[in-house]
Structures are given as structure tokens and as C-alpha cells.
Length: 382
Image (tube, rainbow, N blue to C red; front, side, top):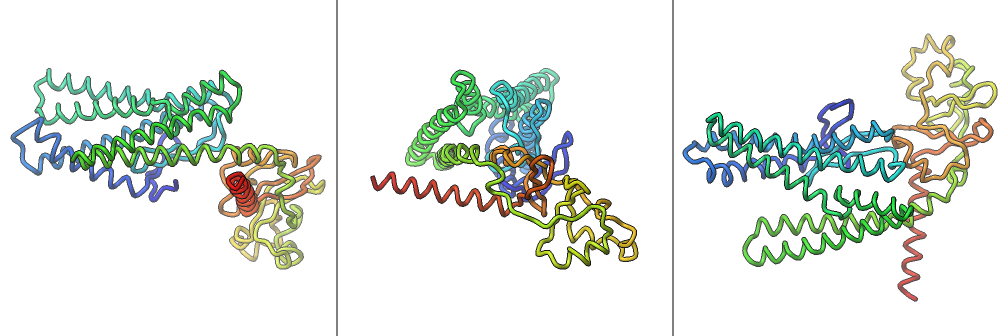
């Protein structure tokens, strides 16, 4: 999920939020201001309740961020590259470039989030006890108690052994470790996620029928999300298996290279104006790739500097440089995306033989999806 707005960088990690987060803050602020706090701490004005409710909502939002940051920080320490965090309606998502290389690494990364939520819950609850002992207003005590309880529930719920919850990742790591089969582990975790989702959906609809409209719909929505997310993840297993067997040479495309020793004016005159591309791989005298250059970056160089500026001076790093026999799946999980004209440079014997752009990846994925759809339709007819 792409963030709707940025929240800056936390611990060096880009953090964003989806617009649905505003709905979560509004709902939590309303519920605590109108339902939770008035019943636990009587005698305050509506303005005070609303102020406290919004403060509780913001603190809950920060606790969700702490949960995701814990995943991200442990992932980076274990050598897994993190590209960002996005908070949304039902929690958050930590985007990584690489899959966990081992069950142990996956287990450590996964457990960091729920343990952080449980720790945050403990801190809030202890804060509530301390506030009560110190004679603080009941409004503060009730707010801390609610935050503590919700974070403990969040941590425990995330530990349920069902994908895509953190507990599903724990189950995945355990089955992976025991069987040595990552795809089988994914199937087990996703099946558990589907079963849990169906149970929550059914119970939520039952509660709605009984009259608990808000609670029932909330449970049903979570159940539906678990079912669809687990199903989508499980459906991706055959696709990942296929992409693991396809080498990059089968999906790469050709591209005109930019000799790094040429000056900008010579390159524009001889190559840039004739080649039908916007991004060029840069090579040295031996044919070894050194980076990429774009027409847009060259256009930013003052015209007077073109005769004295070489192409290599204007290049930037490629998304990756990989051998031609690299599996496509490895490429997908080891690059930070191919947006904004980024290229993967493909080599054989250290010489450039092709490039992979976002369009090449998209075409490969779409063709694989078409093959699987056709295969599934054939199985149903039989």
C-alpha cells in the first residue's frame, strides 16, 4: 500500500500514512471521548473529554508506529533492507526489499512488533498504576489504562498463528525451519489465516444480527481482510516458484549504451537524439557497466558545460547490476523498485548484455498471471 502523505523519517526509515489512518484516529477519539472516558471518569466537561480522547488516539497511533519500527529496525540489523513504513486503517505495513534469508531471521523480525506492543501496553498500565498511587486525576488514569489494555490486546491478537498476522509469520518461520520448504510454510500459514478470517467474519455477522452493530461490523471487516490477504498470499506461491526458475536473461531487453568517455554534447548529438529511450546504461572502454544516465539529468547541466562534462560525470547508480542467470524472483526481492527510470543492468562476463526496466518486470508478471489463470481454468474444466 502506497502512503497518502509522508510523516518524515524515523530511525532513518521513511514513514508515511494512508488517509484511512485519519478515520482510525477519528473513531478512536470519538469512542474514548464519548464512551470510554465518561464511564470511567465522571464529572468532566465535553471539551476535556474530547481533548483527552484525541490525545489517546494520537498515542495509540504512535504505538502502532512503534510496532512497525520494531520490525524495521530488527530487519535492518539482520541485513534485510527496509524501504519504508505505511500506517493504515487496520495497523501498518513495513516494506522490505529482501525476503528473510532464514527462518531464524524471519522469526526475530516478526516477533519484534508484537513484543513492542506488549511492552508498550505494560508501560501504559504501569503508568496508570503510578498515576493512581500519585493521586493524579481519574481521567489520566483511565486513559493510560485503556491504552495499556489495547496495546496488550493488539500484541496478543497479532500473535495468532494465521497469515498475514505476525503470528502467521511466526508459524511460517517454524514450519519453514521444520520442513525446509518455504512454499509449504506459506501454504500452512495462509490456510490458517483463511480459517481465522472465516471464523471472525461469521462471528462478526452473528454479533451484528444480535444487535452489536459496531462491534460486529468491525470483527467482520477484520475477518474479511484476513481471508482476502491470506488468499492473495497463497495464490502468489506458484507465481513465486515460477519466477524463481526464470533467469533474468529471459526477461531483459536491449538498450543503447552511453559511452562514459563521451562529452555530453557529443553524446546528445550522436546518440541521445537518435535513440528512442530516456534512460541509458553507461559503459566504460571495456564494456563494463558503470551506472545510468537520463536525458532529464543531462538537460539540467548548463549548455555551456556540455563540451567539458563527460557522460560518466552525470551518471547515477543503477538499481542493481546482476549476472544474466540471476532468477527473476531474486531480482524482485533485492531491488528497491524500478520507479522513476531506474534500470537493472544485466551482465555476462562483466560486460553489459541487456537491461531490465519496470515495464519488463510488469510484462513478466502479467504473462505469468495469465498462464496461471489459464491453467486454473483448465483444471476447473477437467
